[in-house]
Amino acid sequence: MRRSRIFLSPPFVGPEERRAVEKAFDSGYVAPCGPMVDEFERRLAKLSGRQHAVVVSGGTAAIDLLMAEFGVDSSWTVLAPTLTFIATVGPAWHRGAKLVFIDSDATGNMDVSLLSRALADLARPNRSPTQTRRRPRLLVLGVDLYGRCCDYDAIAALCEQYGAVYVNDSAEAVGARYKGRPAGSAGIAAVYSFNGNKIITTSGGGAIVTDDAGIAARARKRSQQSREPFPWYQHEEVGYNYRLSNLLAAVGLAQLKKLKGILAKRRAHAERYREVLDLLPEVEGENHWLSVALTDSEKARDRLLTRFAKADIEARPVWKPLHLQPVFRGSRTYGGEVAETLFALGLCLPSGTGLTDADFRRIFKVL
Ligand SMILES: Cc1ncc(COP(=O)(O)O)c(C=O)c1O
Image 1 (spheres, rainbow, N blue to C red):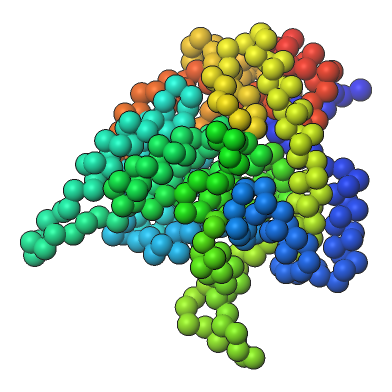
Image 2 (cartoon, rainbow, N blue to C red):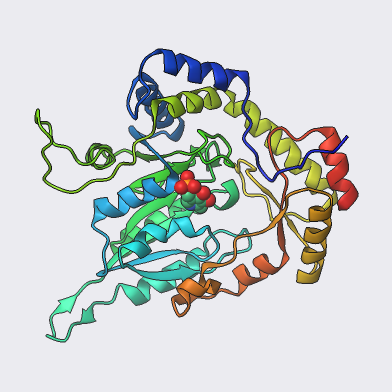
């Protein structure tokens, strides 16, 4: 019998999700609105410790709506860690913002001392050609790398000091905690992702969580083509079609019920790896979305990658730092060497909730 492929982080779904979809189907709300959407938003607000949640078609859409909210355009500078997925900065890039990348600290998360240096440099008023002093508009995107919260308090304090907007990308961090507070509780707003590989999934989906009623209301409106409350289709601005389907919200609700068990399983997987491997240092409260091994050399990483591939097991290098991506060549970067080292040595290991003892035997045989 052919052994099945072991994936990095496949969806952990079963009869509960199937039943939830059927229930949503039978409700008649086979549309991007309905009772499951409303309920999913209520539950996510509670999970994040926020007043409001707005569910949308993906984490990227959630970030894009926040860029729309703040009117990010070519007059803005957006600061983000270099060690993250491109989706963190994609929406700002599409709007023409100048991107500035910040190196990691030893945990892999954004180095706040470098962020401080960057903000101090960038917050100085520019002299425009007409000699009027212009303060640059700044937005900081914190990222909870691999489900490990970045330093919310330090980033918030720096943003306050330099008048920057703080948005947190908690796409990978559903269920994680920072000093006892939920992931997603930082910044003026934060985002979650429910992509198929995330800690909980709606197959594809995302959310904005915030305490600001205006931000939530405008994001909800923009996610539905910015339609005004008229009997006909009336628009004072151009919106987007980003709302989450009621069927998918039903999957999300079923997943949320399992979250505690999912987190326990992921933690157990990480502990199993940590017994025999050097992992990225543990960050208190992390959700163990992906376990990341630190190998001795790039060669060792590549050798492991090859062996995993031969054994039909999915493993991946950590995010390639954004400042090394051809598309962002020439972007201003503070530091970069730590992220480059983590990229050279780091290997994301299979971390799916449903990993079995037999799976681990195969994985450890390769290791
Ligand atoms: C850090 C980070 N930001 C944003 C996203 C985008 O989320 P989505 O795939 O739901 O659009 C992801 C994951 O895909 C991510 O890992």
